Each structure stands twice: as structure tokens, then as C-alpha cells.
Image 1: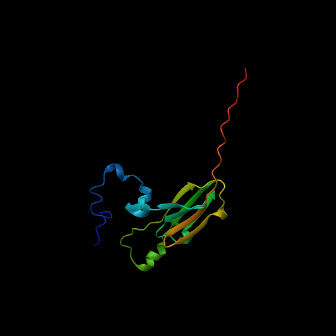
Image 2: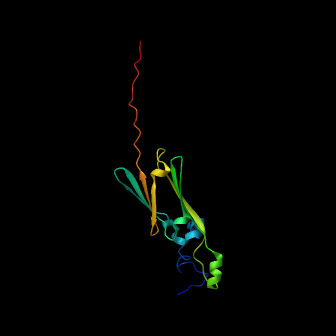
Image 3: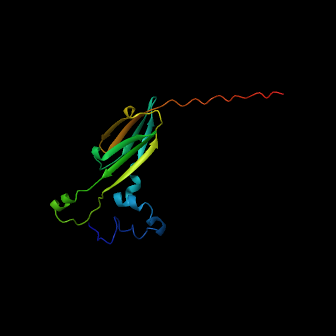
Length: 149
């Protein structure tokens, strides 16, 4: 059933929406609607010699995702654009819930990790990363200095 355009995604969204929550993450919500807080969620698993990271990116294609490693920080970016000509070929647009936009997430993987060390694959909307562990730096022993006199 189609709802009139005066309503949001759900009839009760506008009735129970408190004022202090209306402006939160408006930019993200425009890209993915009211469920934008569920986007780019990740699971991190630890193996003996590496970490395995699974990131949900539903609706994205492999060429819309970029990975960058800069000064020990791994940044995942996903950008999506909608082709306006495609909408014209299909007929008159009644309601549009898909938007163009971008999102990114960064985390520290260490200064010793290089681009060639990270393995990435993308299948069924899930980006899988294998990031090698680096050895923890040894903490120098605390040494005391004797005071003469």
C-alpha cells in the first residue's frame, strides 16, 4: 500500500518522533533513510596471525568501494550515485527512496602494516579484510638510578 507523501516511511514515525532526535544525523538519514544507523557495521575476529574484518555494505558494487591506508589508518569509503537518465527511461518517478551519497569509516591498523599486506574481498554485499597482526612494542624495563652522596 502506498502512503501519501505527507507521511514518512511509516505512519507512526512522525507521531512518535521527539524534537531532539529530528536533527540528529540528518545527512546520513538522507542517504539511507531512517535505518542509516545500521550501515557499515563490522565484525572483527582475531586469529593467531591476523585480524579478519567483515563490513556490511549492502547495495554497493565493488567499484564503488575504496580502501586507503595512510599513516597507519585504514579508511573504507563507499560512494553511490543514481543515474537520472535511467529514471527517465523507466517512466515517471512517483516516489524515490534511494539517494546518492557517500560514507566512510576509519580505524588504526598500525604503522608497520603495508598496502600489500592487507587482503580484501567483496562478496554478497560484505567486504572482508584480512589485516596482519603486528608485534606489540616491547615496553622498556623501568631502571632506577642510584643517587650518590
